[in-house]
Image (cartoon, rainbow, N blue to C red; front, side, top):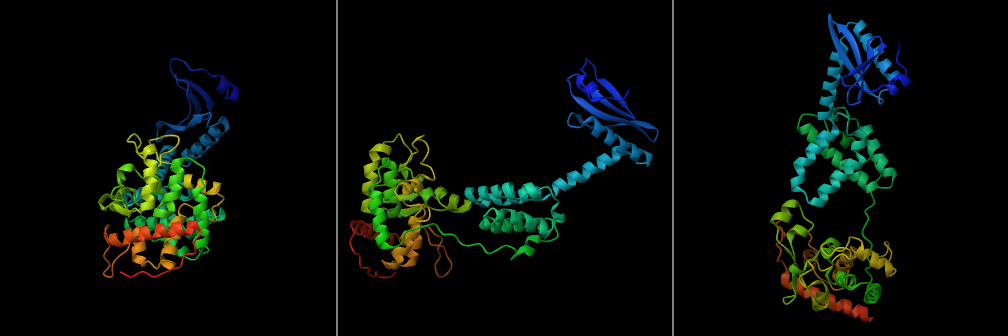
Length: 415
């Protein structure tokens, strides 16, 4: 009798495998463990063979019969369905080895050692979220520009145009790696130049008008939150380092007697090689910054706490990425007015336009990669004397703005 769904559901395992036959070579094998496998028994070249057709209930009775009929048609045509199955698996394996995802991960593994941790994580996250689900399984040599454009359009439609442009660049690098390793013919991403609208460069919101800066500084002085957050807020405009470098500051990095903060290379925004072999970034501390740090030191600098600005939830972790931005929001400054990263733009603009500080000194203090006229990178102590003078002058200038004084710009001697 042909099998029914009821018969299959009610079938129980036994000490030895049980076979329930449906007809035409199809049967269900029930293992002692309870698993149920569809099998197709057939003869080819006078030899009895068996072919697995899937597991019940993932493969229903109806689907198992369809697979049996397809296999029987192959046998009738003189083709061994077992050989067809093995050939399909070989093709699938080759496709998997030469898939875009496999080659992209190989490319990533080759280049990741030279990237910073953040850059590596962003590249992989973008591929995993926006590329692999759509074209990751496609053989890289078979990909077409329209397929890649569909991926980019999907990202563009959600409003992430800059990410779409970055993804086109990443996909292009993977394609070129595929070409170099003999698994792709050419970089099809190059065909998509101009296919996306130009990305609008978005800068971090920053206040750069001196009178508005004075108002902001007065608001910061009135912040009613915890002391670590208050101190971080007051130090941010004085030192204008990157938010991650500021929030992750450790007391071991400071020498308050010599008014120096040395940020280790591994905490700086650099390539992985730069983090390993580069020197610390030196931040001269103006008197005002030293005073704020000494005020905070009894609370978080007792030796039991590693971080200058610890998390309120766990003293062994620094404050979160969003702490300073959240404090600015509490003061009435939304994300379109001012951000924690905006203190860098504030300092860069006013130091150059109002205090006439030479750009190379400002850039050195911002820890930007700068080079001399011969193309050599400046070292970590470049302009240290000038930067110390600039930082004190900047702090004094901010005090004047905070007091509401009308500050008249004056030039400084160029170096």
